[in-house]
Length: 83
Image (cartoon, rainbow, N blue to C red; front, side):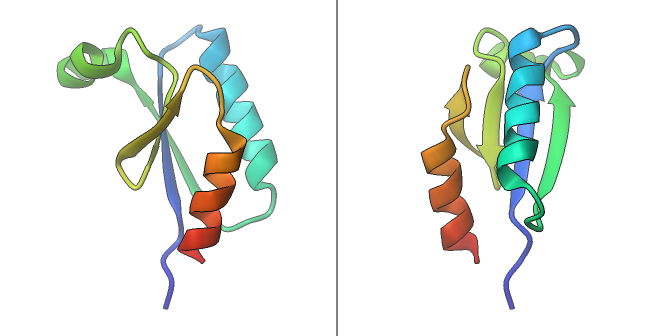
């Protein structure tokens, strides 16, 4: 039995790159069964310290896979592996 792939987008309010990555990820995933969680790095001091200057950062099952821009080939590879 496979689990639903989980993406976490670390970003912040009023971040155009964050909004762009989220829109691209949603569009790329389309109707596939995935979970996309959005987390504000400024709400957590540890996340802000670790990722604050890199946002947006996309995590897959808790591991960073890209930042700044969506790495669509990597997302596709991970989705194929997860199914």
